Amino acid sequence: MKTSSKIYTALIMLFLFAPIAILLVFSFNESKSLSVFSGFSLYWYKELLRDSETLNAVKNTLLLACCASAISTVMGTAAAVGMNRLRNRYIRAVMDTATNIPMINPEIITGISLMLMFVFVGRLFGAATSLSFWTMLIAHVTFCLPYVILQVLPKLQQMDKSLPEAAMDLGCTPIRAFFKVEIPEIMPGIVTGLIMAFTLSLDDFVISYFTAGNGFQTLPIRIYNMTKKAVTPKMYALATITFFVILALLLISNLSDGDTSRQMKLARQKKKAKS
Image (tube, rainbow, N blue to C red):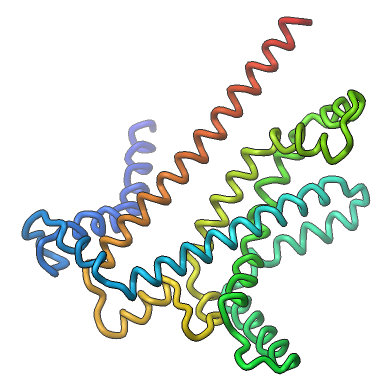
């Protein structure tokens, strides 16, 4: 039974990571071939650095992802704190449902509905162009928010409720107690939500495609436009760099969660030893 479970797990992992492994290998291929590895070379990485249009799309994508993840993390943390303090279960159920809708709703529906809303508002105020960087930013914050809330809310529920009360008993104001006591306790959830929001914004194509304005092109849209002609191996090189960046972010997130868990265990052990 153990052998069969190991084989099954290995096949699942192979199924998940074989395409990525092929992409990584052929990003270092000397030729354009997708079936024959003719030799190791960094040629396509050099070609990537010479492609100003692609690099501009990367810059736009990073700018959008950084802004969207920062805004959604602040708003999502504040929303999670508010939801955690709700005492009416019916209102809490409504808020939970409203949080889950953007995640369950198909991206194409979200993209089209946001585009229609932006066009309507733009025409209402007589704007020359309804879609721009700002509409994309609002759209990205909209679909990133629920993921931040769902990362921060469990940390708030796990936190000892007496900690902020003890801080206020010692002279802290409610705001000071929040920043000095609650924020450090829920920081792993905030960091994980930030990384998840950044990754989702970096990856998004459908919603970006419907809410993008003229003159602002993200990397997924750039790659989609290239598929109408031909995708060169320099895109594999870019995908390889992106993969390792995301892998590093995931490692940072997991390490921060592990450090927090160890600190909490040590604190409990010290508390037991004192008692």
